[in-house]
Image (cartoon, rainbow, N blue to C red; front, side, top):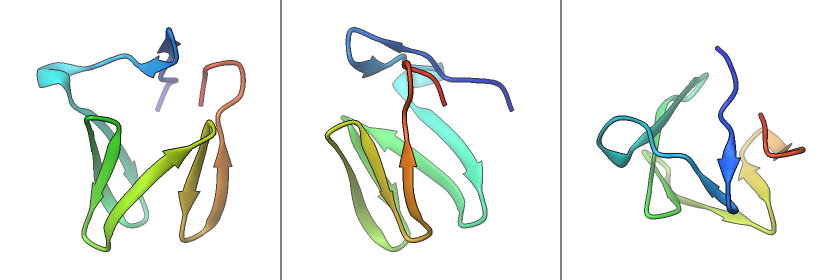
Length: 63
């Protein structure tokens, strides 16, 4: 699916300033630095994504 790069510590915006990632839970939308999900809100903390499946790390600004 390619890589999303970070600039100045922020995910670069895609169309309409929204970043979307397809995964097992369906589509997750990042808006204003917060994941909006059916299960509620998931925050990015200290450069790590907190997910139900465990931890997904951002390394060198790329997924």
